[in-house]
Length: 393
Image 1: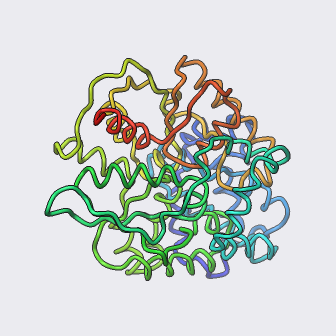
Image 2: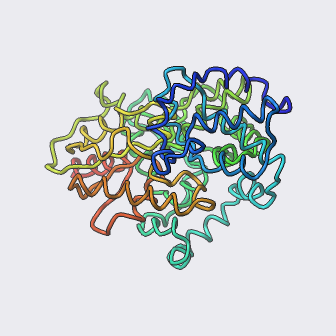
């Protein structure tokens, strides 16, 4: 698009318009509209790239309605890099229709820890008016940031691992980070959480703010040097960090160090560095966050972690619809996000389980918003950390 994405034409050419992506696309399944499908969006992007159309309100609507869940990538036989294509499209929209306030919030504002702390403290009031924040009803959103801390692992020859704390999770889900540290140190890792790290940049990239996303990536690459593995306990952050190769050689080296926390814990369980605990006689309904299943192709490790914690694993919606959280999607498409959230909650209810596992903070908030108070929603590693604590008593 105007030379800003030199690989775009080659990426577009990988699509053979077979349509296998259509039934996997949440917005197509809701509407039946070709323009709301990956194939339709690729056609719209191609029209802009090859000069037969211009960026206008309709193009903004077609590309902006996408949840960027990347389920189409998993279904695609041609390995079309749809996530990269749609991010390029959104960046073109931003160039044509600047969104200065949102750009400020997503590329700079999320570095302001004080702002997130204020929102966290006011969440009980704000959540009465802002739907997505209704998912913040758990007391665990209150806590102290782990950024800047370090913890020595069990054993004399502990391997170093860096904990990526992010921004939203750092302020609103400190309990998750604490569980990650507890499990990693029990596995023999020494954990550090450098204070200089910042937002991963996923929300900026998904919204089309390329320069801001690149700047945030550069800050993180500089803040987390070395060769130590980088553990990430929020799937949306992990998928974006694993894509830092788009930002050059240093970004690619960084991306090669990134592991989802479930991958590290499952490996430690298999190797015997972490125990497999006795059965608890309880079922956990598992949902697969889009950016874990489709963005990282990590599916089995969360289930392995839960089984090792002694739980019976029940699939709530294996390979199913996006829950509708999708970062800031609900700011522009609240009705669609709510429809998908209600459907996902119904699938969880159908399992009969009262315990629910979701390895992404946004999914967790969305599920809490639509499930009743009898359901407990946690990250798989939190369940495992609790099982270790119970086993040591």
